[in-house]
Length: 330
Image (tube, rainbow, N blue to C red; front, side, top):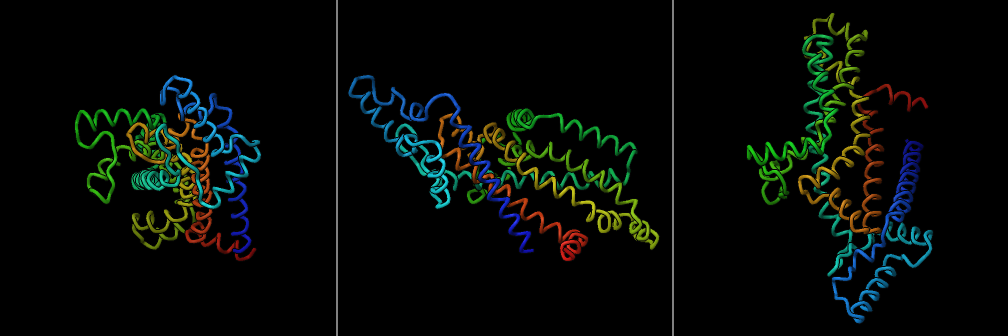
């Protein structure tokens, strides 16, 4: 177990280093300088005195962002600040705000969206996958598979726009855009998160259902399933108690790996539904060349992604005793 933890921690450090280094280099090939967007000419006027003020502001931003230093020093200084919890500042024309404050406001929104989407996908996909496997190659199974392919073909942002218009605007069942904190109004919070979560979950439902169906079909042919049936155990108990657990390992793996896909989809979905989450913060950082904010947000997401997959290894041991035995023997 100690070796496993050490190995995973090493992977965590390596992945964070590579992701942050790649992001650090990528944002610097974008056209334009951040100080030109953060301090536009129109903010103070066009006189020579105004231009001097602009240049002074720009010099201050360059110094604060360490843009006047070589690239390697910029990366080392930023990582050093990040490790201490200093995520830099988010600049605006009239003021600046610590990135950490923006992250504290945005991260819970994104986590809520991803949790709701993941739960919604699993709650719908697991019964569909189990029943499709039980009725494999029958009309119900064929309809479920056709529906799954249709879900995979639908981009989540296009589905989000359709749902926002028809369900939110035309029917008026739920708010089409905006966000309400659960502390303010739990019912309205769930309504505002329903369409974004559904838009993000539809593609995952198809993937999870297909994976679980495939594994369940193989599991239902195992000897221990035949023995359970020979003992007179009901089909429902065989499916949900004996077959589902060993068939869920692939589903669990993909669910953990799909956190990255959920994060990528959340960037667009949060913009479509005007949710103030990490996706919206990243989009704003890209559009305004907020280098430090973008790097810090990507690093936080990368760490969270690796930690989730780190925890999956321990969940495997709980779900499948065979994995515990192999590790114990090793």
